[in-house]
Length: 357
Image 1 (cartoon, rainbow, N blue to C red):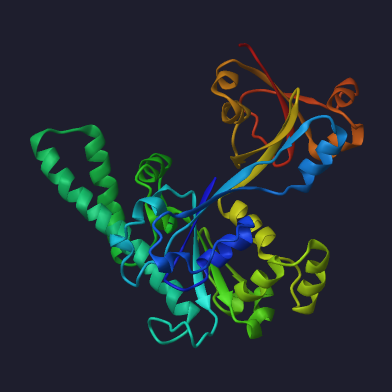
Image 2 (cartoon, rainbow, N blue to C red; image 1 turned 90 degrees about the horizontal axis):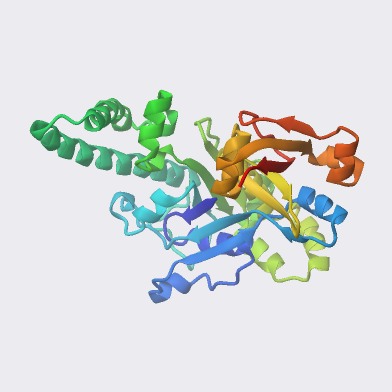
């Protein structure tokens, strides 16, 4: 799973990147002309994996991971022309870091701190970027289809002709009702306004209470869009503390928890991602897949050979596994279910795949 942090300049993108990944990158690194982007692969904490691993202390624990990318600030109006456009398109989920803090030493380009304005501006820019792409593609298709009729080209032209007026009205592609075939075709173009969008508002210290109620800053009812808040300045200080001291400082500032757990939960929800577990000879491993993934496709997420040779899936929930202390004991007590290719994997399933090599 790939999540890209982006936004206008001086919003706290690198600060959030550090909070999420535990990195200690200088927040002014991009100011020096640094061209290499900040990237980290982060092991996702999961108490269920910890509990399962406790049953098998001799095995290695392998958590699922998230790949984070932190982009340099994009100037207002430049998303459609940004050198980072390809990185935004490759992301599974987009996280827009929004400035909500005051700092006289960091002037706002528009001379006004307004998270709502910046959110609406960025959403418009993502839509405009898609509109520019569609118009360019339609112009190219027009020329190509005059030379020869290609069924796929006709499908593209029909779909893009339908999407264009919605985009012109300022509607994101994720909000448009598409048929399964249209959805699949449009996804292949990695449109920005079709991706999930998490707005992370970096609030001032005086606004810390709003972290628990980000809707008071900006409320969105749009499909696959969510709003969270964090105080980068305070959390960066807490990040430097010893683990034993962090809870006390969080309490002192009225924070229930750090940003990472809330961020990961919101991202998983937006991306409709779930986790299942496998117990191998030497390891207990977590895997991330989308909701409503069949056992057949889940097997393929481990290895294509397991998918090709799929026979059946032996399944038990992680809670049920804990009751029986081991997968083998659960099988002996008939607590493990046998499921076929079409079984929809559930969040927290522990699965052993039977397959023919």
